[in-house]
Image 1 (cartoon, rainbow, N blue to C red):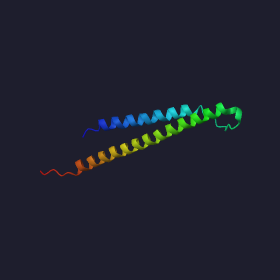
Image 2: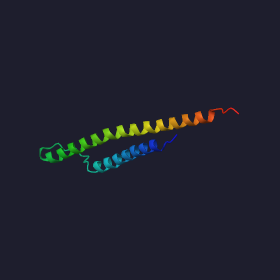
Image 3: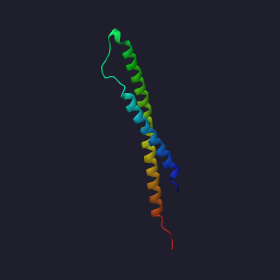
Image 4: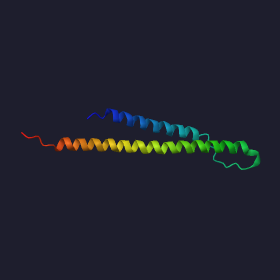
Length: 94
């Protein structure tokens, strides 16, 4: 059985997950940890809201991609182990 196409798809999912991790780190670097509530700080409040919404969206997609990557990896490993078990346990009559 040829596992290369499955491994390519898994690799693309893993790479996409890594890109999201880097993107989240980049977006989070612009996050301000101080809470701005004063009337004169409306611009900072809007910026905090925008960054928080971006991080929430990235986290949603990151969780979904991570779950898909893990599930596909476990499925490929299961298929490989099953295939290995079947091929090694088959008795060839002489």
